[in-house]
View (tube, rainbow, N blue to C red):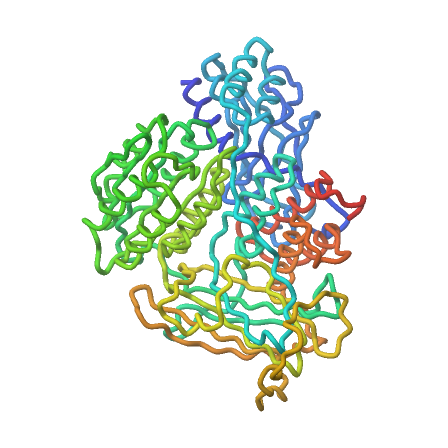
Length: 636
């Protein structure tokens, strides 16, 4: 019994890497709630270092230091809440405690009871060098050594791949009056970057996609009204890193959908069980994640499971959601081994989905993999053609990435984009819960497809502009009105934010502006009558209904904001996230802006923060400062 409890605790622990300990900083609000405590051995009374303390229902966690002490800063809005704390540590029984938060520090101490640990259990415990260090510290060297050997046997080489990103430049309005792009609801970049920060490493530059960092969070925009499936909100503020410039936020908010009233789901789980998935942060975490999704199924939903390794196969025929035990059993039986016939697996999954197509339902393949396709029809072009053909038949694609070392981020993002779907990176059980439980509607149900944005800038008020992020979503201006051109999809409840940095006319700006130079036959056409208005820019959006063929048009003018009106939490927090992304990328556009200023901006814009995701971001910014991984001068 103890051994089983230990293994379950261990897998959960490995699936949820600890967040850095968040200590009070100079920008912490003076009346914010916090949690502090100490974890000790119930038998010996000694302090326990490396225990993981998590807050149920949120993304917040901390780990104990050498003295067994831990702390969590929670911010405003937490005072009076009753929360449940959960403590896990290798070799000890899990412990929980419910406390009501007071104004100031709430103390929660734990004394953990030791449980028996076998050598075989230790062999599966090592997912990273950080975990290996904890095993060595907690147990005799004779027991920890086999785990270290197992880690070395996997190989320490890194074959992760990311598409090159060339940061958007400033463009002159007179020669480039239109900016056109596809929306992006992927969030994989944020959780992947978080993984690097937790490991104490600077993420690769091309792993940092700023629009995905910003869109990881929800924003308090107005709910849609009428028949339009999303609302549009805009705001203009001074750019913090270049006060003479303006920052324009364009926010979209998708209609919230009651998950219990969603159309019936025809889902095919396409699961990678190849040898590359034989790691605690891959197949075991995959099983945990899909177990959470199975818990949400309704009787009217249907699930089939296709797996692929050296070959592909159907391991579960379409099964109603009322038979959760049968679905879970099929998932738990999976074992990793063999090479990766990803192309064949995709083809089979789409065939299964087509055989069970629901005309009035949600038809979707959910691919879970590290992206390492290496057998059979696996070229990007072949798989893209396959996916594009099936999306036109009404079957969309969600891609979930797992693991480290050989993550093929570039391939998975491309597949999701062409499959009218979304791409997420699952770095922990908490992230799995966010994607597959808390945001299930947005992940699985598309409410608008081929959503494009086109912005026209007023040359009388704007000299130049640049779109922050979305580098791989830029479209030609003429593609905006072309309904044959594919664009991004918006899920139920999704928030999408785009930020433009604008150089006002007449401002002496230090930035380099890209222009076409002098033209022999003259420049752009003369400004129209609207150029004399107070408008900075004019936003146009096109979208299609999920089963529609023709797009619908929305328009929204944007004027300069009043200087005496305070900036909203939405734009301040989105700006802080974007600035963090620019600093991680080493962008030339953030000037002398510092991580300390990012921290201050984010700390003042946490808001209600359901789930604690904004507070978690603040802890990542602080961790980035402490680790000095950006090579900046002290204090930046």
